[in-house]
Length: 306
Image (cartoon, rainbow, N blue to C red):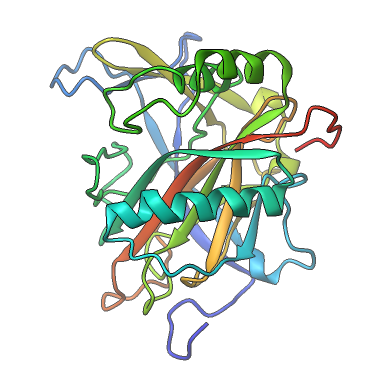
């Protein structure tokens, strides 16, 4: 980490993480994604909980996707992230190769990405959606998991269909490929997250991950995402003192964070959130990052669990 950075390596920071509250009646909390100002749709309540977040750079053993749900790796690229054609035409392929190398998958398919340029937390309410080729100014400042056990296969099948979201121009899979993956292959969905600033390590709103080795399935509950034409879902988690949270301080441009958000034969649904680092200074630059979502398909004979 460069001298003078506000993110010098230390064992942990005391942060305040935003957790979705479990519904008292057993019904999943709902988030309004319709774009309409209708207070009857959203039932989500957020609790802000003081939480120790450990700097994973100080861990005796580096975390792995197989054990902890996430890992950090060195990754060089010459891509200009302001150029969509380079992101989609070059970086996608680089990320696919990286996932095959680090995770041992047979095939990797990038199906979506988001660029964020974040100057402030902006509260725990929204996710933020950008038009294709643009960026988002809001971080996801709320503990969440991207997919549920049922949502992962749905996402793979959706990759064989046209989309209005802008995630792809042409579906990355055929219907036959999607069914073969869901029905007979081990697969995972992985997020590859990095800083896109070549001059400023991440000092504002870094990403925290919940160590999957400290969770159990009963900790998770579903949150419904209410769109105009469909109902999606993701995971939330109850805060527990037995949970271990970690982040990588001062992430540099040549570092890539891989974390698993779904696994077909794995309990590792990595919960994550951006958070206010209490060491951040007013003069620290905005956080500029890209997150790339990748479908990882493993060899048919593979028995290793991720």
